[in-house]
Length: 498
Image (cartoon, rainbow, N blue to C red; front, side, top):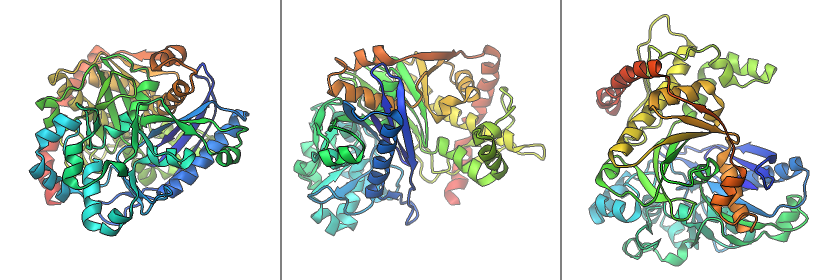
């Protein structure tokens, strides 16, 4: 089983050894915004939703035994816990942006160059390190009471088997992990006054942390406890599920956020990537590293558009059983639109990481339709990716092929658009819920079902279709892209004043 814990929902899928999905279930849960710039979540409620999803997936699969469970989780969600592993306060999520003050202190104390060269993480509010500093400064009672500070992977592993274990992959995203020395950084921990014993034990991905509690296994409908296995960051698990087991392959994941991951043989920690705010961390595949570019909004922009402007399509979708997104984009032209949409509805992602940036639409006329705006949203999100891929290439990162996963991989219009704008072949795997698949493959490695991650991918991965760039459309998009690159610098001063 792969259990994927995302920002706005979780999904559990049971797979056969050959990668065939046998049963799945999903649950949605909210992100709480108790104050401007805050983003929190009830971690204990997420655990309850995860149990419900696992139980339903096992029931749907019509089985009572699984070898192991692997976890794929959202990164940077800091959860202080007591000695029983119970959350002491809501998790502070990656999309939370309250830590500008702490980041200024980090820049002054360590320097942005040192932090990137040792941890692979640019200074940003997304990171675990500044969130811990915020807790120490503004929640001193929680800081003192907390037995450990966990992320969702080690939090849920502890819930399932009583051991706080975190994958090297997820640990290396915290800005607390030294990529070069391969351990929690003694220098950083000493400087901020945090004992390494208050963090989880680091293990490679695909290693069993222990057997599930028998009582929990029974509650989930299992006849015997499965192994609970380290997985990793959801995007890295998705990269494995999409077959990124050699350098040069890249993955685009369109869920709540939109992320591109590129597999590399060694961590590229150069100045180009640092200035582009591109994070570099350990892959779940031994010996490989990942460079990650991020748009915080991603599919969340489409969800906002659907929920705010498309009530009619939502109602028709409920009656017909079709996706509201399919109805919104029905008969949309594959040709470039006459709009430019800046998708910075929760600030910008890489390379600017400007939390004060806002969304914008240029080119509206009385002839503009809702379908035109929806298409422009897809284009704007893809132009954001293009800016980042151009930066990666400038930093010496090779990109041969892009594999598409997540909800966005179900849209043929969007996949062809990605190929046309990005100028690389875009490939769709048979299983687009690749984060769950990657977590399940790691579970299989931990249980001895597969010898290693490479053998697991060779046994289960099936690629269904390749979208090649259309030369004529690509040329027209090239001209539109040149205009798009001017939008953020032009409107940023106005957004900041707003």
